[in-house]
Image 1 (cartoon, helix red, strand yellow):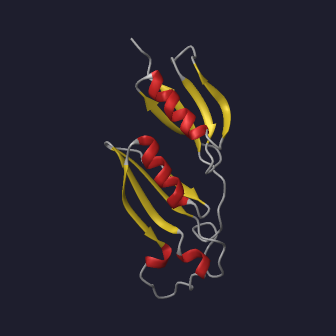
Image 2 (spheres, one colour):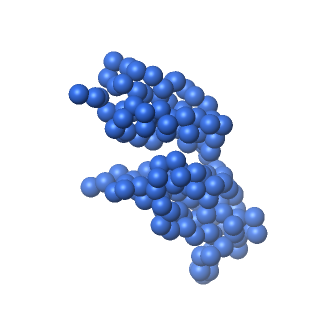
Image 3 (cartoon, helix red, strand yellow):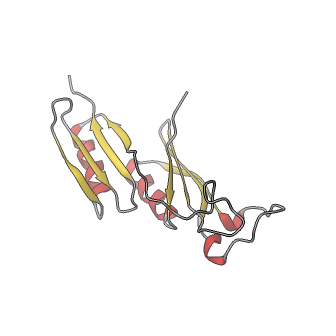
Length: 150
């Protein structure tokens, strides 16, 4: 079993995933917009502004996967609890990254913090040589945790 975080964005998913691919040294292996979806009977027409939003993106970093999409704007005919309710900021979660070295942890944390909001600066803790909490410029909350060094 593997848990795969699925992030949502408000129209800037492509930019966020390109940033994460560069920062984490990964590769975007799939990306498709809402405008590229085949039409389905009973589905309301997409507004032009929604067609360029990403319906789905998949980033591979080694054996790990991070998936994401842009939220659709509120639309008549779509259940806002399922889809089409507009973007909502993440609440009640953090994406936690386990990193092997303090130097790499600091590099990743500083990259995520650029243009974002630091909740807890990256520093030594009683459990780790490096830990920090930050919400990046795309609104995603991250915890960067360096594995305990022997």
